[in-house]
Length: 457
Image (cartoon, rainbow, N blue to C red; front, top):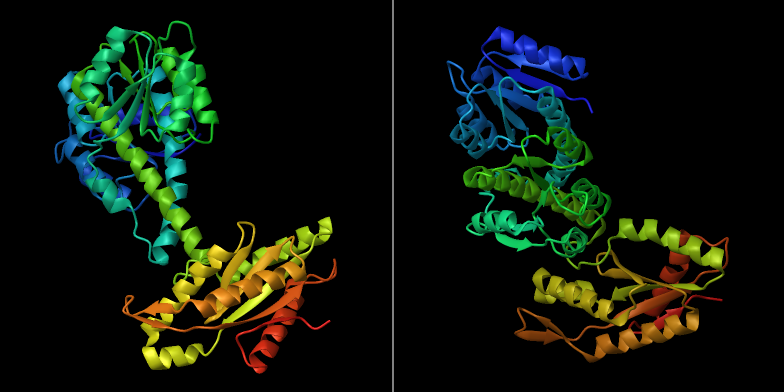
């Protein structure tokens, strides 16, 4: 996994050392000698990851990190703080500033390269989701960046997988001050729990007695339900080779024993924030898909989706020798409703009409707003006789039950006309099917409306 890494340090020798080590692993390296230069590079989106020195003259690394993580345009860029400071309080301070990790000089090869690769992989996934979110923003869906900046990382849901009571009891007691915590000593059961519940983070001990913890991490990454669930590993300081392997498998972060409470809380907050951010990005993308195929007023499928999906349904029905019917429905005298009662009343009628359609059809049927007051229902595995019976039942229900308008203060009578057409073998097409149903609808309206008319033989 390659990436463009920004090395920020005011000491040229340190820059050259990191540049040589990263370049040997085929990373593309760019450099900055001060905090302001680093902020500008990140603002221009010219890097995938930042290795940031703490001790710099113009602006220390803590402040640079805080600014990066408080800016919606740069908060998603991973930051690894690199420094000669070796106090636990300095590491916690860096993590609380928003850093993804804190490495102490001299940096062991086993710590640097696997960590950079791991963060670079996560950045690729985030970038793809952000690109999709930009499209969503163009159609009016709010971008999640500002929510990510203000997220405290607290009130998450955490699962601890550890078979040593003395260990998991201390971790759970610390985390319960900020999060909802479950403990599962059995790794096999933990996999089921993680899949069943929407956790924000799984904390896994790499020192399980009778189970390979890396196997559990691999299984979490292989299941659809848990593939994107962050994993925080806890291990002994001399277990670096195994920890590096965990990062390759997909572990997001790690803690070395003895676990410091403040560092634990800081790392968990970081992972919970990341989880929520990526979930917001995915929700944004899903919402954009729904908006692209759904009519905003009625909640039914829109014409674009119906036309593409109808072709597939026809192809499947023809290949299997199954029947298929299409109903084209039109609300009678709809213009008069708008002219007499106003467009708000017309919208009320359209929304209520869509709900009544949904209640009258099966799950396999496709209902859409075709345009204006015209609707289409596609009914797979349905012949003309059954389609006519369903259409007549819907027509009667509409005519028998007046529609509420003006927030339910008034009710008006509404009727509909329906034209029906059935699939005519393998050579039939969506366009021809809808044309025949539309011609039948025209005859229904010509003959007095409020009726169901099948296509001409």
